[in-house]
Image 1 (cartoon, rainbow, N blue to C red):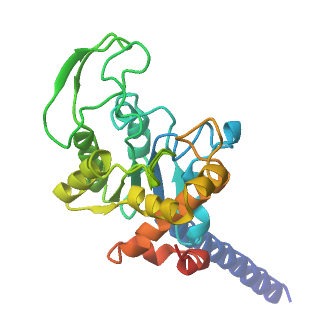
Image 2: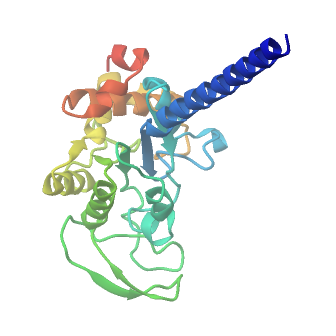
Length: 280
């Protein structure tokens, strides 16, 4: 009897240990799958994430409403945009370095700068401007804010740096032109296809990466709906750059519409049911 009892006890212990090992292996598989899940990182200015991203002052960036268009079981969306930054200061103030440290192979970086790049190159307010081109020209300054010597490059140059840094991590960069402001000329919406849109397009083409003309997609929609509706539905009466919630949602949908037009972009396989059904 004693030997039978010992046998049963040993068998129970073995089965318990086996169960624990299998449970641990199962957890490891789940963890590895979660770690392998790619992330879409958003970088940009306040039109991507306004304030703390909580509707500060009734204003929103499109990055807050992008995740519904992607299957969260397959991909994550992280909004690292920061209001007030340009393509230059997002780098020089260390924000890009923090994103870069998290990038892994298979991830994506959607970048949209330009609204603040038109600011002065050097002043005591922001000192955030970039040179207006996609060229390799530079301007050396003694930064009036940081009190340091700085070599300032073109808008396109900074985008190309983001692109190359992203690819070095095994991730995929996607360049977007800046969303249009709520400014009109004889019924025509604001466009930047001969300035920041052009330079963003040139930078993307130069590096052989996907470019989405977000400005053009949205401006076309604005003109279809008309100035009166755009002003009353997507903006408030005091801010012509930052959208209210409905405007941010429209811009997020436009981003997805741009992704869907680029059939070669693997991001398409992560679209949610809502993203697949989107008609823009």
